[in-house]
Image 1: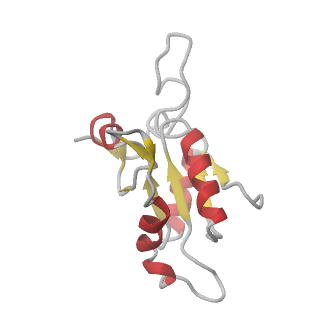
Image 2: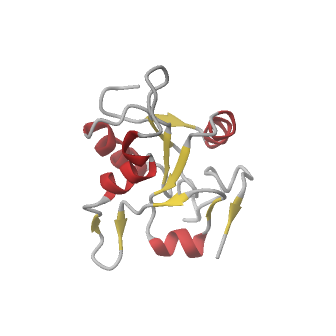
Length: 142
């Protein structure tokens, strides 16, 4: 892992990490509207990085992530803290959010490099060339 960037994982690699590390936490950092209406990975915890109505970086993001790992209580000397896997729409916001966590001292930070929906295709559609949903991984929608 780079000193200031989270490690990128393909969607299937992220699911495998979640399956093999029960303490790992998948955090969907998209807006509330995206999380609820577009859908999200099953079992993901929602902590928005940028959200409506102001569309600015969530000033409590790092604090909310610390709460998820109980302020470090789910850490041990040998293995460190629980892996945190971030997911957004296409992997761009999760890269920035991961960088912020690493800057604040988190050690085991990953991000889904294709995101939930992947990049736009030639018709400006998502979920056709990459992403969690494209790969048929478990997800749900409200």
